[in-house]
Image (cartoon, rainbow, N blue to C red; front, top):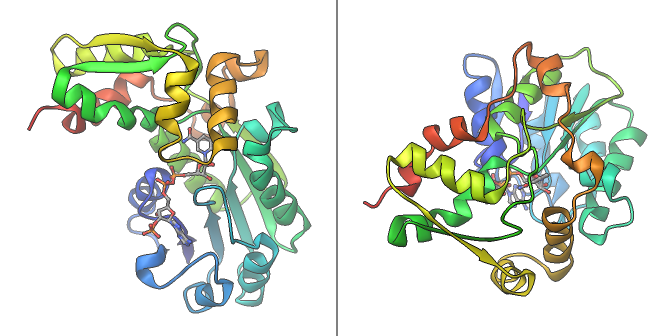
Length: 266
Ligand SMILES: NC(=O)c1ccc[n+]([C@@H]2O[C@H](COP(=O)([O-])OP(=O)(O)OC[C@H]3O[C@@H](n4cnc5c(N)ncnc54)[C@H](OP(=O)(O)O)[C@@H]3O)[C@@H](O)[C@H]2O)c1
């Protein structure tokens, strides 16, 4: 059996579809499994072969070693951790420090382990859905800075492959097929909608105010550093999705077409 944490999230919901028909169990707090209370995970992990571990929010209140101890005691053999590219590209950044601690715990566990380090998610564009629905408008900073955003559907497919085994001690960097800027993403949304979408460039300060409504300050600053001043590594397309899946990763326009309903005026 494979146990999926964050099963209602961007990656986890796709992963549940990837694993449909296999022996799989979905976890989130609504199933009574809270990562901040490792004991609450025990019943769901009993007898499982593999665990997909994602870290909600900034990981506050979660002890990764305790979670992995419970998994190991329950008989889990293998863990696949959803981390972030930022752990490699920004080792000093506060915004990714918690994921670095999860990676260390996974490596130090007695389990077979695989780490997935994604670039920014295509689904971050959901943040633009209200203004696209209401005003056909995308407002974002760093209009022309292109990054190889990755489709959560590709992340889920890579997670499914690695959860089935054979990837012990591998760290995969998962990106989309090509760097794309926010202005180009807005244009892809317009294509998917078949309507014009206006792009307005925000200043870093305006973006920080906006993101601060739902992210802690250090995560806001870390995110804006990557979006505005990406390193060469963060601009680089990784071959790892294609290596794992035997096909190219989906471009942003495919994500936009699949998720266009969220951007349509009801
Ligand atoms: N977005 C990006 O650009 C990006 C880039 C690189 C890495 N990442 C990493 O990707 C991860 C986020 O993945 P995602 O977008 O798929 O997640 P998400 O959509 O934010 O979903 C979070 C999931 O975690 C569950 N959850 C929340 N608190 C929980 C708790 N205390 N115990 C158990 N489950 C809990 C939620 O379900 P309930 O609320 O029902 O419990 C939900 O299923 C983060 O670790 C982030 O750092 C994101």
